[in-house]
Length: 199
Ligand SMILES: C[S@@+](CC[C@H](N)C(=O)[O-])C[C@H]1O[C@@H](n2cnc3c(N)ncnc32)[C@H](O)[C@@H]1O
Image 1: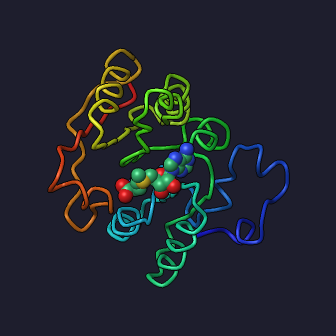
Image 2: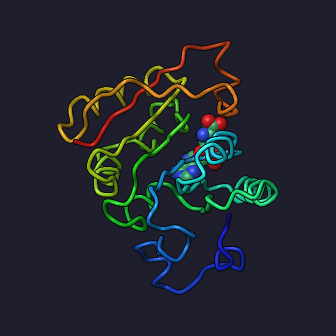
Image 3: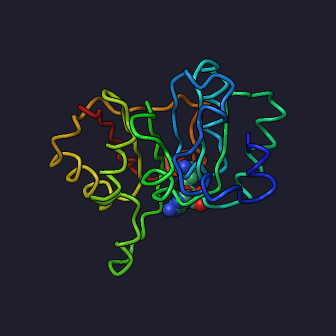
């Protein structure tokens, strides 16, 4: 759910300049935290959070309308373990999330920016890997999926060349947890899946 302070607008400079006050946001801050970056319409987030009530989930997306819809659904389903942020994903990971606070990141179908001149807009780049590494607990994992072949190759090469991460078997969501983009592409295009663990 969106915390009340986020519903009414930006809070204090301290709240926006980080670190994000996880302890006061979740009812059970001692529980593991999993983050869905670019959570879209929240199909995965809502289904996964319902199945794992003792895990804290944070959904981040830059589209306010999507965040509001997920918030409404989470409230209707009484999912007290979901919190939401309307935020640019890199900024949240690099500057707001506390160090060694995240057990799992899910990054499903990040925008591929297919034109060569736009590739610099992709979420995955060396600075983002540094931010993932900073915020993951040791042994924490990143699960990613994309239908864009070139982006998948780029991701695979980046993680393979980074000794801070070890490849693990890819995460495959159950049918009820498939995101909207997954459901769209699963019958039409090969999906590249990659999971890595912070060493
Ligand atoms: C292609 S959609 C995928 C949504 C969802 N993960 C799925 O698989 O259905 C990408 C989502 O990421 C969000 N997004 C793209 N770039 C972002 C960024 N830099 N920070 C936060 N959200 C972003 C978009 O608003 C959109 O909801």
